[in-house]
Length: 428
Image 1 (cartoon, rainbow, N blue to C red):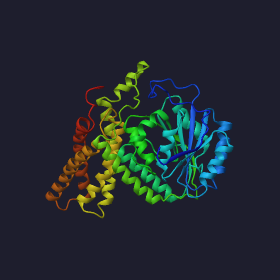
Image 2 (cartoon, rainbow, N blue to C red):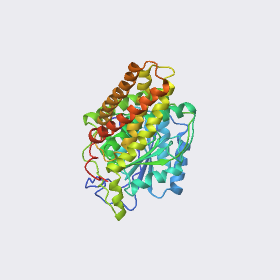
Image 3 (tube, rainbow, N blue to C red):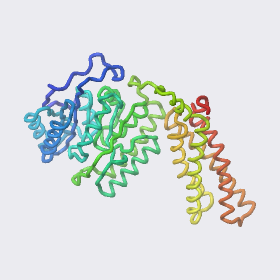
Image 4 (tube, one colour):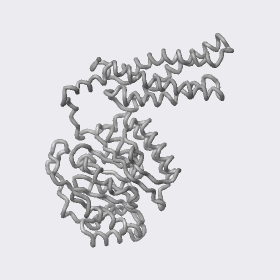
């Protein structure tokens, strides 16, 4: 591997990859799994020994699986590589890799491709994430329940201490991922992740970023290809000595989101030969209720409830914006905000059997939105033409009536065109 060298290694407790080249779901999970904890470092000569000693002691005393710590020196310019080599020489189950180029994604790609463990883990050297979450992170991968596992600072039950600037940027970025890509995970950038090695090796050639967007791209590709991502709430304390340029990183991440969306739209994000989970089958007579969850009755109830909440939100937002903006501008702004949230809610709860790429769904959703906007705006223009001095209450009544009619048409278009696959089964 060009630009990569193994400085020291201890493979005594790590088995070789399976000779049959199995993809994981078609082979037996080993009774005693091996786990490789990868710690990328760049210019960490002072903090590295203490952090590795804490991690080493925790794994020795409390971790039930066979483990190895792999330190990846990520093109350090200080004595980090020498310190890491000394740690590997004096501590059992510690080994070192070195890369000539900087980049967190490159460090993880190198270590995970090189590892011979059943499960590979990544954690930041500052140990910002509480180590009590390590076993919950790894266990679902060892027993075959999930393919990737991530720590989340935004999941219910997590406890986080960090400054307001990073808090706001993190929440906005992760909300953007969920809205634009329909992602189900809540925290893409937490430095605490794990994956089954046989699965992640199939994903890595398709992840193009070698820097901070690596995590997000890996997770988006995994979800897009039907892999299961397990999420663990974590305790996390911000490292005040962090050298990450948060604004620059966020900007690069937004460019990455656009690139991945383009790959989904063109089919380049679809990966062949990944392990596929079998479709769930009923194990109890009452499981027939699950089939009804996609019937017309359920879709009407779910769509109606989401639509009612969206309509209330739309009217309230329109009434606020109308105090400053003209009719059409206020209506467009209110509809844009509420429709994006409405479409995402229907994707998650109403049309759950829908397939197709996220890009296609959002593109067709925009077309439906445009038709809906033209209809409701036409109703407001007609009122203004008929009665230029109509009261605000009458204006809201016309908007409400046109919204109800437009919503019925929108349901038909969403069900038959945007979310196909929901009209032929489970008609309850």
